[in-house]
Length: 403
Image (cartoon, rainbow, N blue to C red; front, side, top):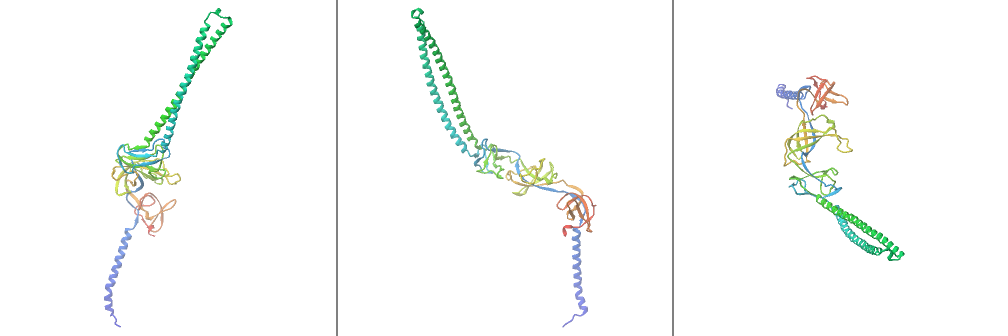
């Protein structure tokens, strides 16, 4: 076996030792630099936060096409395609009119019956009046004869015959008066009966006219040029489509003014106070994530509402006005992500969140030596929080998240 001389071995190992020593020194320096870059220190700096909201596009102005009055639970028979370009006067919506057609058939039968009743009443009245006129003529003849018989001198006939003639005159006079009264009464009855039949006929005609007008109302046209958008069917949780039920006055279609668009967003009640009127924001359409549109908050609802009756979640409605629009891409109902940016607060004390422990009642910062210090903070970003009280600038902290 060959042995290396001690001197040779030392000379050979010395460069290796020096190399290893250099490597260790370099590693320690890198670790120190990394540790130094990750030090958590209370410091001053500029602070800015933002809050993200979800919303939908809405047109600030739109022409609505609604279900006609009287259309209770009537289905949509036909509607133009959502997103179709229409001109003023184009047919865009047709509501099922089968109930109206059925009612119209019944009214037509009622109209025919009313006409027949009127004709029958006219014939009956004519016959009854003619009978009364004939009776009056007979009574008139009898009265004239009785007057003639009773006009002879009193001594021309025996007393009994003369008295009978006077009684006959009196009876003929009463009968003539009764016949004339019966004729006048019959004429009044006939007039009233004819008036009632004519009123019934007029009502039947108006009913038909009304149903015919409804038929026209059940076919709706575009009130202006534009892009047609199906409105939301709140019962189904989606846009209206053929076959859906509609109710009087319910908006089925809209033709929005795409030049002026708003965003309706929701602000959770836990974030109450985070936004205010005129705050700037950036809006990004989910369908076009590469495009961003500047906006400003125009209104905030005073009370948080639940989106559903059995929901525990509550939110404020926030309306943002877009400063510019893209009429080629934007359509009402598109989902939008909104980022509302707070103003920059310069030169404020900041504490890293990695050093904080959030208790149910207090917030603690872990110092470099492992002790905990209760502090008071304000708003937080993803990395830092505003320090209100409890620590001073330059205090070194320990990273709790590294454990």
